[in-house]
Length: 259
Image 1 (cartoon, helix red, strand yellow):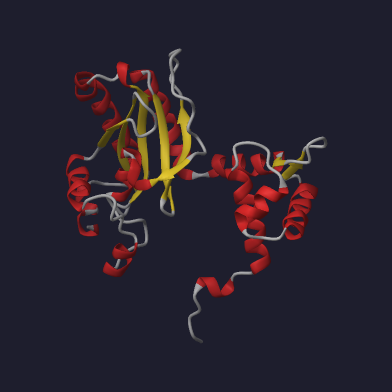
Image 2 (cartoon, one colour):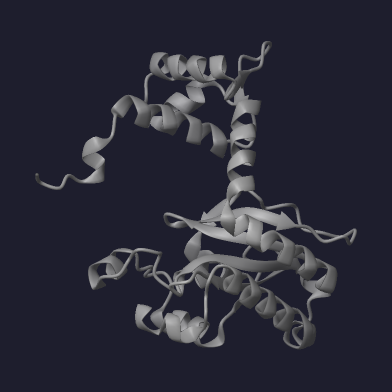
């Protein structure tokens, strides 16, 4: 029997439904059908029917006065169940909590979603001055240190040269990615707002693949170069190594053949 590509199994109606739900997730405020229709290139009747189906199941809510739509409680409930059962989150979160107690800065867990960086979890700083939470937000991988540490290794499952070429990010020079591999971290200033500093280290699984990133994000005035070098970065790298070991990573020799 010939092997079929995954795309050949897709059902267009399901694809449309998921496109509507994802578009609704991307909106920061309640949204009208006309906005979703224009954004997705679908006719309003089709969008309305899909939204009505989601509304019946509690995944979407409709504001009675304005007629605008937003995500419903069922969607949040499903997301929470997924996160609570996610092995990466279970292993990382306790270490993140200890890291915040040691450094007093917000610690994020980030993952790759196609060509984007997704902020998956956070343990926030207890200090009064803090950065607005980034959880749930997506950014292009190549625009921040948090994304670049994920680009420093191929995505899990990309073994061949063709796979690596397909997932290459030309926006990031190979020399810069090689430096991140050698140093084991990346730092940037301003990628998430003026005066915001981001330190990031990779998290690896038992095969040595980079499957996530651990980031420390805070205001620049609290993160001087000396403090970063002597205190914050060593703590962050130690935490990254602890989480990676919990994920089965045994050391650099496990991943040397991935590059």
